[in-house]
Each structure stands twice: as C-alpha cells, then as structure tokens.
Image 1 (cartoon, rainbow, N blue to C red):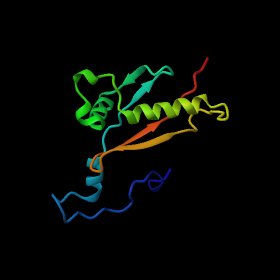
Image 2: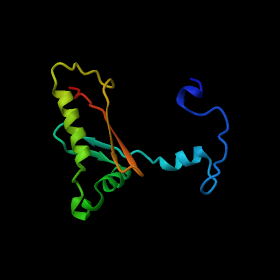
Image 3: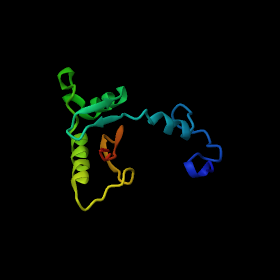
Image 4: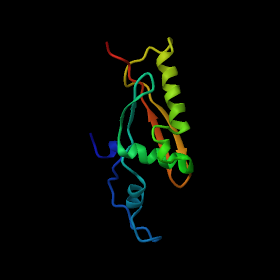
Length: 124
C-alpha cells in the first residue's frame, strides 16, 4: 500500500501565516480526537463504552447533560441505532457483515461529531 493511498501527504505542508504559526497539517490533527466507541446489544443495552464516547455524548447534548443523564443517549445516537435496527430487520437486505455503514454528522459547526454505525449480525 502506498502512502498516497491512505491519505498521508507526500509533500511538506508549508507553515500557516495565521494564528500561532501551526502548519495546516497540525491544525487538522488538533481538531481530531480519539474515537468514541459505543457497542449496543440488539435490545439496546450498552455492552461497551469508552471514556471518549461519554465525553462526546456530553458535547452533543450540551446543557441537557448532567449527572442524572448518565445512560441517556443523545437523540442523534438513538436515531442512528434505530436506523441500524431497521437495516438489520429488513428482509430485503441480506446483510453481509462489514458491508453496511450509516453515517450522521451532528454537533455545531465549530466542533462537529461524526457518528458511524455498523450493524453486526448475531452469530449462533
């Protein structure tokens, strides 16, 4: 696999003349974060959640998030889960694991959050 095929620039990015002098590449890297991971069961129970997922949920919910809101998910996450459930339940979709992905962008323009969902078929 070449470096170009995975999106790593092959040339030096010049320094920015704005702000604190960070390069454009550094500015992009600073806006990225560790992915938040939530794993739900078919019944909607949380099987796994990392710390970043909790932080991003707090960011999405804003003022609606408080100590009592733990375990309450942002509407965008619930909508994505509902869409994944519909996809799993659809008879016309012969799901092959790894072939489907749903994406939603939420948050404000300054700190957008990309939600990605993958349906996993139960193995028996």
